[in-house]
Length: 156
Image 1 (tube, helix red, strand yellow):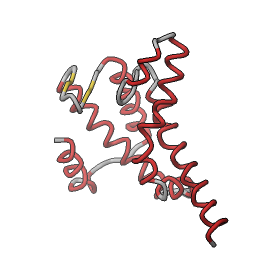
Image 2: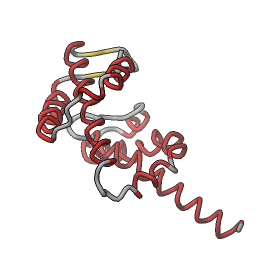
Image 3: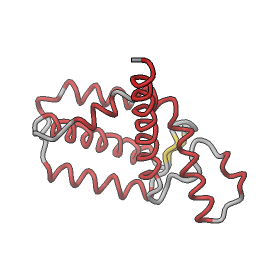
């Protein structure tokens, strides 16, 4: 259903109004929903199917708004190119990197060590999704960058 929503947004793109105030409202509602709505697509478990659908629509709007903002301004997109060149590394390593955040949570909350085995994340609620996202993207990107530099140094 979510893929179909993306398709609908695509087919109706000319009719979509991109406005920073609408974006801000959508983003605030998404933040509030993240506090109260629990979604596990892997387990096919949703607190509320309606709120899941609403969050999906708002999230699609926010992503499209940010994409348009980046494309229509002089924002330096070199960071996006850097991330784009590292997508295979991100896909290969993000779950492993999540363990760093799990270790941090184990230390902060004094969880037992076996909680490190929790998959995919120990606790992604209460704002923990932010460090998971940042480390899950940036650490593999940096490792990919180091590998590329080493290849150039040793092989070229």
